[in-house]
Length: 353
Image (cartoon, rainbow, N blue to C red; front, side):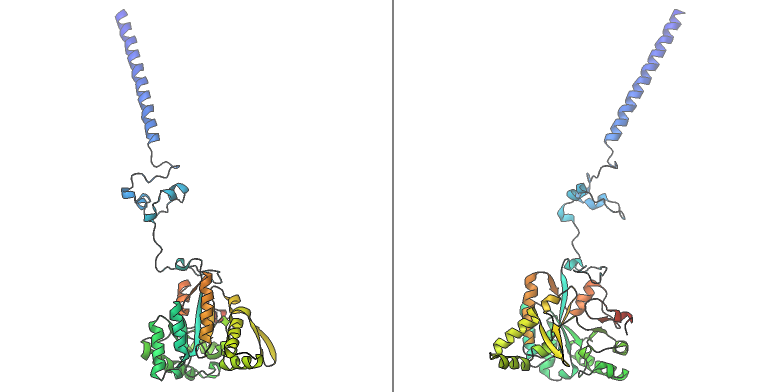
């Protein structure tokens, strides 16, 4: 009896010891699993990522958490560079570009009408080349007969400027029939294509005169302007000469005063006995502005050059041809579009005919 009792007690002791040992080992093992878990909800880790490539630490199709810890762990060399071309969502009326290629910049276009001129256009092209600026030229078909004038269009195109249609001989398009509208543009398109190998996508109706019929028949995007320099009047050779005579100064002095008014001070003018104010161009500059000059006048190129100097000195703007500016912020210009600045006007949506 004593032997059996001794064996029973020994068996119980051994069993209890085994149970206690197993509990201790399980506790230790559980603790090790907790401290070594790399996927804990409160931990962001790129440990073990091959060659420091943090991108493989985030499963395909998921979004990496944006925390200070993760940002600090990303080597600068692995950041994705900004693409040369980006698809963006346009923000009409925005203060700066929505395109990352021009982040924080105000995009504007400088345009020239009624050329090419046998003498003044080449001065404008020389000026633009010296300043590294590309513009849009709305040309007249009747000015494309001489080889000299054709060479100016070819040079402008080769130097990155945009060539657009401004009609054949500058009629008021709202007084034309559908056939006349088409013929005006066709004759100019054909000549431009023979020079540069492309048909223009933009059309500026003479005087900005258009209506629904013009928009529908021209087969192009219509581009007007948001800033009129009125160089055709204020900086014309006749006006400069008259100003010099009336103020007893030289034409050089008169020219400089009038250019200063166009760009920086503003001026008044009279139409049909009523006085109007033309604000200084620099006061009107906005993201998406389209500025109107004429390369047929002798002082317009100089005025545009001084404006470019001002624009470039601010560091706020980027000057682009019209189509390129529009494409940067939204889709390419298409037939039926009407632009008075970068964004499509209500006229495009046929809400104000």
